[in-house]
Length: 444
Image 1 (cartoon, one colour):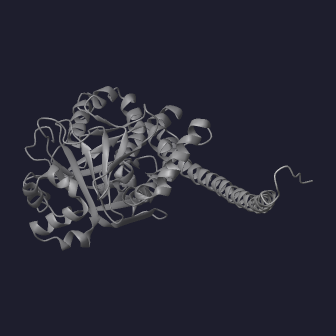
Image 2 (cartoon, rainbow, N blue to C red; image 1 turned 30 degrees about the horizontal axis):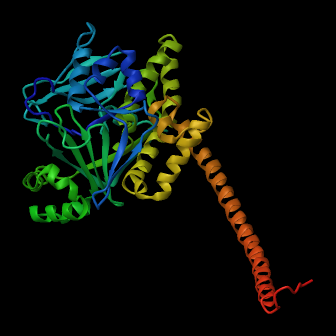
């Protein structure tokens, strides 16, 4: 129980709460409770190697995402869940297996000192349910039952980059940097980000190929690496803290999971990371998981709680959407670490936002569709590709027209210039000849 545990295992990457997640929290009456403990981030704050900084807004002035603490969110959700009389929470237990045909789960208590070791003095427990919802993460035990079935598609991919977390402490009891931004240090093949916390600190996450992490074996090498690539971050983190914290934990791996379908008969369904673990670069992992719950609730209302109809419909709706956000998350890593350094990328952002202002229902930036609406993920992806094609063609036509116009203008000016030069030459000779006549003589 994370609420009483002295040490919480697992990741601590801050979570970015956006519209989809907020809608799910609103449906269970928890939106304000969670939002009140989050910090708004209205733009990306880009840190260049030279120390210069500039901002790329996420959307309109009133649009922002929220930095929320993972541990606090888990505590709030656990407290809310246990208030229901028909809910019983089993901490310190692990699922051994499940029978999806009979709706049975087998669990056993684990050693509190090591979750991989089962208690020898405890017998497995068996429970029977009308519906098993597998939300047991990227390495789901429930999903293993699905993999024994024919026509179940599954794939996972470890990306070649890992992540490591560092901390920027408060400075003079306040934030050491501007708090209402997602700070990014993009360096093409790797990057560092920093998200604000309620205690005035920042959680920094360094994303980098594993071989780059492995090259840094001493504190001095780490310091030299940061002096080269993140010089402005050193005084924020602190030299001593940087050389110490870098070696506290090894770089962690990131996995992307895709599967289909998400249900077995009318007894079992997968949600969250068990169905679609995504890399964290779009800030949509939690939001997509929360939206799973919201969509399932909407389907239950639509089909009057008929699980035989609800589960196939859930798979039909969510599989293409979750596969789309998985692909977008991979794309966004390239954008965050590399494209934000591009003048063309920044120009296109301005073009997209300008066109969105002129035609708000026709042209909608991809980030806006994903983060600030409930447009289905796969529809947002398709629409973005269509918009890109139209806008790029429009820019090409405008550029071609501009080049043609410039060519014709230069040609016209050159021709006019020759005409003017001939006239000036003639007038100069004319005036010179006038000077050769005596005063009072007229020239016809």
